[in-house]
Image (cartoon, rainbow, N blue to C red):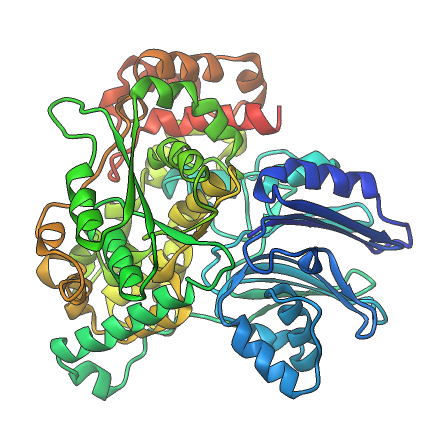
Length: 590
């Protein structure tokens, strides 16, 4: 996993290597093990490297093959690169390195742009052809790796993080009003291609962007998640599905052990991460390092799941580390976590995940993590609500949206108020072809949109702030496709994720499965008190906020008067959403 950057000119001018260097520097944490920059005529590419596969300098990037006339910058990990290498060697290709980057470069030369369909992994890349002048940008199927785009006069820049594009300059930083509507409605999620800034876009997951020398651009969707299932799939028993799923899980975890450094695991103590640890132990991983983070108890609620993580660690003999984070430390480090965000993310998990990543990075460079299981296997409370629904759009919006459009009119200043684009977006995605069951429709929306721009983005941003690579086996695309074939009734069984829980029972202790799901908010971010409330007040009352004019004064005043009374359906603070956005803008845009 690394950070990539680039600039392409369409106006006959040469690229600015200083802008690429600034993007590289801004992404230094993503790749602390090396850097490279290549600029010639109308092309320029930069890269920061985190050495995970092929630790030698032979795998440095940007990588260019003069014999083939093709070059690449790449961020991610392709787990089936050894198999692809063998196939390419059979075609006569020869390799100078042992990692995945050169495999992608030669796979493109051998099979063209649709080579991506052969990849199993997480990736974002830019490939250029010396002779034709064409460039291809691509992103993995589930959007695990980010790719941001910023057009400017005469060209296009791209990078692994939004702040890197801001460092390059020439970016329109005015607020995108439709993105603002999404942000305030969808728990801070802004679906692609938009970001909160008009001058920055992001490539959608499962998408290729073809760029011609004259600047002509064409997007191509190479993957979508289809919930159509055969009569045989629908009739297959729960027990049969459990065994099929368990084999799919084993394959997904095994793939993510491909590395030239040891692979550890984040062990929250929940079913998902515990199952990953159990499956890694099944693979015979020696001296498996596991990590668990916990917070202070608040209001009689236990702030950690140490006891459950300990059960799993002891069962599988892992080298386990408890990481306890006092609330004072969480709040002291909050500005750093905001600085690490490519886009503002309101989840309470961000600061905890940021500090967890710092601690983990002292001992591990790669970990497996359990994000995605709830979206893929039906673990959230709104799935039963939409089951059999006659009005799935209404029921989904009632459960998920932080605000409806009527409230939005009271939140946003008139100049920044858009139409109700969020409800229209949800309706369009739920009703799209390929899923007829309301539960399947909600699972598809959550897996392909909400998951990508909330927990997955959070994991990428917070881990890469410390040069830590996180791999997410529940988002193995073959496993996700398998899960889509499983009837929703099996997923909703046993109060949610039934089929996954029963598969897990074959691997991990029942004590970890048969217990309430844990949730540990940071109270100061949920109820906004003390120093964080002061920070938010200062931000929203600042000269910069007044000049931006995003929010209505009476709404801000109402929230500040009683922060704890204004909580979203997903248990977040409405005031924190506003405050975080302003804090993020003041950190990155100024």
